[in-house]
Length: 617
Image 1 (spheres, one colour):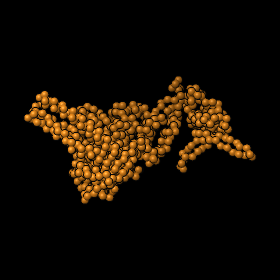
Image 2 (tube, rainbow, N blue to C red):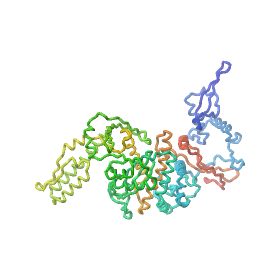
Image 3 (cartoon, rainbow, N blue to C red):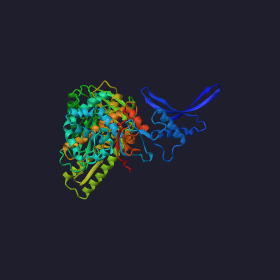
Image 4 (cartoon, rainbow, N blue to C red):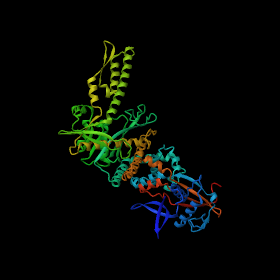
C-alpha cells in the first residue's frame, strides 16, 4: 500500500486529498485500487506518508508493531477500512462470527496461536507434484494410495530439506503436509518409508517415461537434442552388499570411497529424459550404448535427433554406434585430433566472436567470449574454438599437474638412489603409475630407468610443451551436421553445462550424496527420488524462466518459508474456546511467487473447532 496525493480545483479554489492505494494483480496486469480517503495530509512531511501506509497495512493484516503501538489516527483509519470492506462491524470490534451465523464475544487478552507449521515450500512442491500428474502416474503403475502419499512426502523432503529415512518423519511433522494432505503423520516411522523405496523400484522406467511425456506437453519441450553426461556419487562405509559399488574416478574427489556412476540425459531445456546407474569404475565411453538402449526403451529416439557428448565419449566406436542408429552427434574432440589443427588455430583470420550468455538460472554468471572458426570435410564439420577465459584455466591446470609430477619424480628418484627400490620391473611399474596419474603432463617428459647409472631419467621435452602452450584455451568440436553454423554448433555444445547444473543441484540442495543405503535396489531408488525432486525443481524454475524471472529454487524456497499454517485460539464469553486452523496471511514477496507460479495462496480451507479451554490456560 502507498499514499497518493490528488488535487481538484473548484470555483477558483484548490482542494487537496490523500488516498490510501493498493496495487492489485488482475488478468489485464497490475492495477491500483483505492482503499479509502485520508483527507488532507499536507501538514505532515511527505517522508512520513510511506511509514503511515506501512502501519495501516500491518494493522489490517493483524501484525501491529509491538515497539511502536498504533496511534489513534491509524486505529481510526483501520476501522474505517474494515467497515467499508464489511470485515468488521464498527460497533463491536471484538466480535466475530463462529461460522454458524451466531455472533460471539472474544477476550482479546487471552487470544493465542499454536501448532505453527511451515507451509510455503511444501505447498508449492505439492502443487507441482499434482501439476506433473505424478499421483496419476503412480496410480497407473498399480501403487496403492498409502504408497503414493508417502512417495509424495519423501520426494518433497528431498526437494525442500533432504534427510535420511530415519529423520524424515520428524521433518514431515514439522511441516504443514498433514494439513495439505488431510492425513495424520503422528505415528509415522522410518520402516514404511523404506518399504516405499521397495515398491517404487520396479516401476522407475515407467514413471520416468510417463513424466517425460507429461513435461513435453506442459512446457512444449524440444525432443530433438539430447545432452548426455556422467557423474559419480559415493558411499559411506564399505558397501559390500552392492555389486555396483566400486572404486573409480571420483568426481566428488573421494577416491577413498566406493561409488556408483550416474548417467543422465537431459533435453535442451534442462529437463531430465532418462537416467541409468552404472558400476563405479565404468569407463565413460562404455556407458553410451547402454544409455542409448534405455532412451529407446523409455521415450524413443527419433531419427535425426542430435546427441551432445563430452570428450570422454568422443571415440570412433561411440560415433559408429550413433550413426548406426541414424542419430546426429556433436562431441568435443580428443587431444590428437586437436593437435592436427594447430596451424588453423595460429591463423587468427576467419574467427567469429560468440558471446555466451549467462545460464538462464544463473543470470549473475559472467559472460564468456569465445571465437569460433568452421572447417568442413566429407565426413565432419569441425568447429575450432578459442576462449580467453579458458587460457588461464588450462595453464593453471597444467602448472599444478607439472608441480605434482616433478615432486613425485623426485621422490621416486630418491627411493632408487637410496636403493629402497632396486628391481627394474618394479621401477618401471612405478614410472607407469606416474604416467597414468598425470596423463596431461607426463607426455612432456621422457621417463626411463637407466640400469647402468641406477638412476631415474626424466628428460623434459620443450617442443611438446611449447606446442601445448600454443593450444591453451583452444578446443575442437566435431559433428556430422553440415546444416548448422559454427556459432550455433558451439551454443548447442555449451548446453551441456545444464547437465553439470543438474548434477550440482542433485548433489547439493537435493543431497544425493553420500549414500548410506546398503541394499542395491534401495541405492538405485534413493537416486531415483532425487531425480523426481529434480523434475519438480526444473518445472518450478522453468515456469519462472518463461516469465523472464531468473532465480533458483533455493532462493524461492527460502522466501516461501515465512508462510505458515497455525491454529488461532479464541477464548469466548461462552466458556469454550474457538480454534481456527488456517494459513497465515502471506507476505507480499510470497504472494508474488504464488502469482508467478499460478498457485493459490489459500493453502487450506479454515477449520473451526470448539474445545473446553485454551492451551495457554
